[in-house]
Each structure stands twice: as structure tokens, then as C-alpha cells.
Image 1 (cartoon, one colour):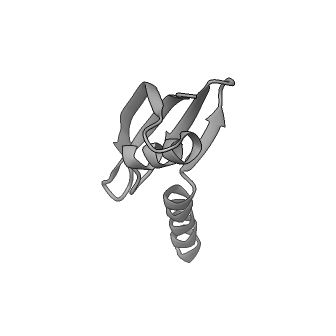
Image 2: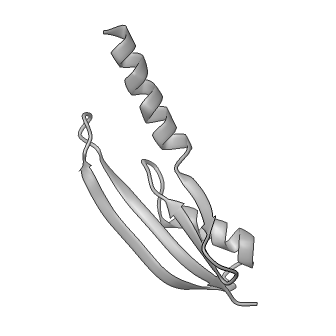
Image 3: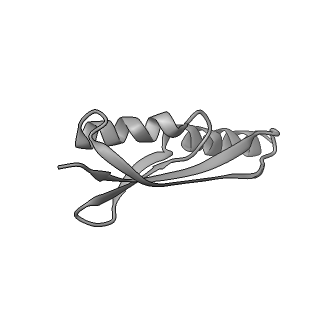
Length: 87
């Protein structure tokens, strides 16, 4: 029982802390994954601001969908935003 609790807690911690990443798709577009508990579109825009300059980018697309509820009853959002820097 303790092992199950530790594994569940570890999975939750990994979900909360490691959910934002940047993936380069081409020289002009950048894709940001800001999925997970406690994350939102603001996390994606902060990364775009850091890369391109504050509001110096065009949002190409935003995709978001809710996953099924986990064992605690929370629904996790999957979010992806593609931006093009205005350089």
C-alpha cells in the first residue's frame, strides 16, 4: 500500500513540475506544450515573450483538450500553442 502511495505521489509531482517544454518545428515557428495541472495559456505566452520579445509574435494556432478525470477527480488539460516571431 505504501509503495502505491509513493508511486502515485511521484507521478503527480512529475505531472505538475515537468509539463512545460518548447519544441522547435522550423526556423520560423515554435511550439510550446503548456499542459498539466496548474498550467495555462499564460505559461505558453511567457515562453513566447521570452523567445520573441514581449508580444512580438503571432499565434499560429492553439489547441487544447481536456483528458479524462484521474483518480483524484481532476481533469488535466493538454495545451499546445504554435507561435511565429515577428523579426
